Image (tube, rainbow, N blue to C red; front, side, top):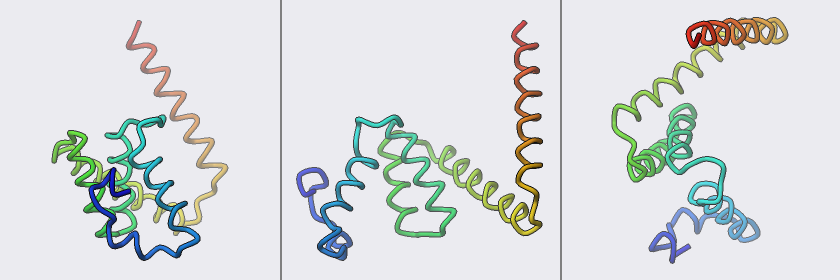
Length: 124
């Protein structure tokens, strides 16, 4: 950890001993690892969005700085946070109104099919 981060962050010392090595491995391999399906930039933007959605100032700060290290511009960070807020907003509406999930899926599939048809027509 110290070799990769230059230090052992104090918050990592709060992990219970049976979980400390495992937790560091998850953090290292998923967040900082390069042998993953997502690029560092993509992972950082996901981190920013999730951190904003769960209202975690620690995660928001970390993932924002991580995103900046990956070359993410401030305008992209703002858009990422807005997308997270948009998802949380509509999730609240869907859950609060107990929207039928099967109907939602059917409508979404129809929308996707329509958009694909529009894109195919534009490509012709």
